[in-house]
Amino acid sequence: MANTTLVAPSLLAADFGHLAEGVRSAEEAGADWLHIDVMDGHFAPNISFGPKTVADIRPVSKLILDCHLMVSNPQDFIAPFAEAGADYFTFHIEAALHANRIIQQIKAAGMKPGICLVPSTPVVALEEVLAELDLVLVLLVNPGFGGQKTIPSCLEKLAKLASVRKEKGYHYLLSVDGGITADNASLAVTKGADVLVAGNTFFTASDKKGIVKKLKGN
Ligand code: DX5
Ligand code: ZN
View 1: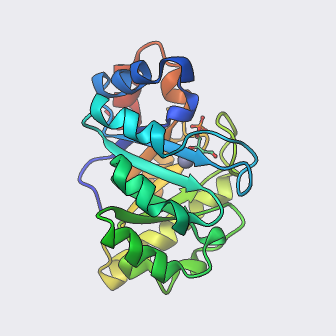
View 2 (view 1 turned 135 degrees about the vertical axis):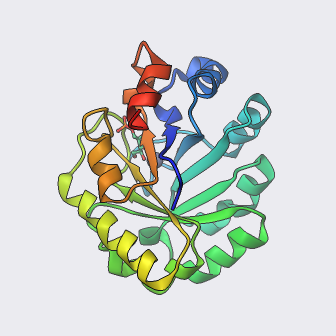
C-alpha cells in the first residue's frame, strides 16, 4: 500500500506529435508515474505505442514508466520493453496462457510485474498469482480508448483486492485506469486505489499542477 496516492498521467491522451512535451508536463505538474498504454490492434481495438516509444521517452524523464500492455502474446514483448527501460510491465490476464511463467520472466528481465483485469474479468482469476505481483491494474473501462466513462461496478474489485492483500500480507499496489476525474478520484481511493491513472483529465487540464493535487486529495 502506498503512503500517498500516486498519480499516473496516461500518455494516450497526450499530443503524439509532441510526446516529450507531454512527458515533461507530467513531471513538472508533480505526477509520480507515466502510464503508457500499449495496444496492438488485436487484443485492443486500437494501435498506440511500442517499445521504441518507451526507449525514446526514457531519457526525457525520471518518472516511473508504467507500461500497460493491452496486447496478445505479452510474453513476446518482455525483452523489448525491459531493454527500452520500462519499470512496470503490466499484462492482461485474459491474454496470458501461463501467467505464472510470464511473471517470472518479467522479474528476470528486471521489471516489476503487474496484471490487469478488463471489466468482465473477476478478481478470482488472479487468486493463484497475487502473491507474485507488484501491481494489480483494475481497468474501469473496456480497453482501447481514452475519454470513456468509468463503469462503477469495476470499483468494487478494489475492496476485494485490498482485503486479500491485507489478509495474506501481499504487497501489490492497486491502480485504477479509465474515466478517472477529480470527481470520482476520492471514491477510488476510498475503495483502495493507490495509483490513479488519468488520461483526459490530466492532459485537458489547463492547471496541471492543480489537477494532480486534486487527484491526490490535497
Ligand atoms: C484504456 C487505457 C487507459 C486510458 C485512460 O484502454 O488503458 O489508460 O488511457 O484514459 P482516460 O483517463 O482518458 O479514461
Ligand atoms: Zn492503461
